Amino acid sequence: MFAHRILCTCVALGMLLLSSGAYSQELSVAHQYLQRHGVPCLFVVKVATPDALGDVVTCQDGREWALFWLEDEIAFVQTQTRELYNWDPEVYISYPKLYGGSKQTAYDELAAAGDGP
Image (cartoon, rainbow, N blue to C red; front, side, top):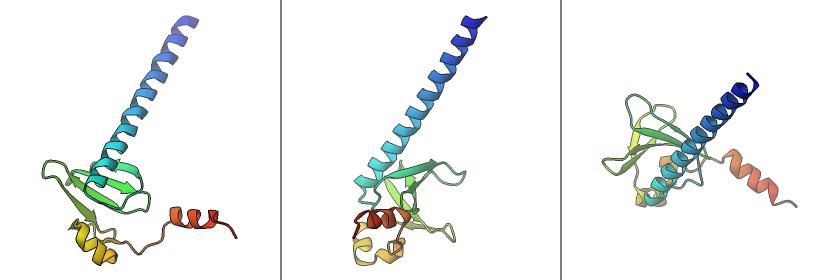
């Protein structure tokens, strides 16, 4: 009976470790895809799959990006309206506010606070 409980616990822990490793890999693949397209994202915090879209990833700054794997395209998800805007790195360089680039994030605030007096 005791050996059965240990076996069940080991199986449950193994499944947990495998699932967390798969999600970690999913975050990494999504981040690499964003980097390849020149999207300003330090790291991906969440990957979701809404019904109408492909994968939607959330970066550390809160911006969301829709990934269209087959079309090899990315779209910025406007937070208030949920409308999609085609990602163009050249437009971002000239007009960062179009993609929500002017917003200071909690991550930026922590980094600035860490600089100290």
